[in-house]
Amino acid sequence: MSTTSLKLPDDLKARAALAAKARGVSAHAFMLDAIRELTTATEQRARFVADAQAARQQALTSGMGYAADDVHQYLRDKVAGRPAQAPKANAWRT
Image (cartoon, rainbow, N blue to C red; front, side, top):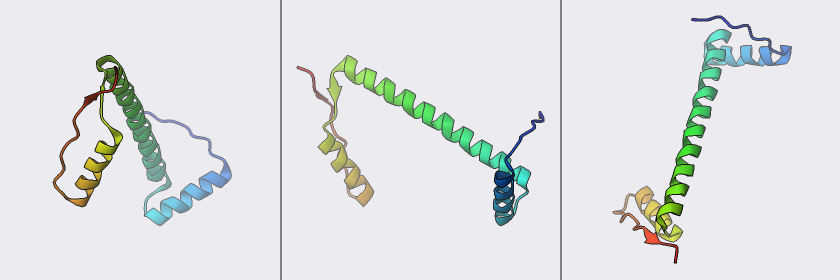
């Protein structure tokens, strides 16, 4: 494990110490968790964007897509616990 020095403004250090105490952890553990959570969120966002770009490229290449109304109805049914028919892809390019 490597050691890193972190310079914090006094107000942020005090806020982090209070937040750590409220969670019942050390300031060190609190900062590790904060860095871990933001790192994970950043990685997840990058994967989300890459997946979206790949899906866009696939739609442009194939000319197939889903009607928004069909997708919305499918999601409403799923959330409500009703049987849901998956939407069918349609050609959107002429």
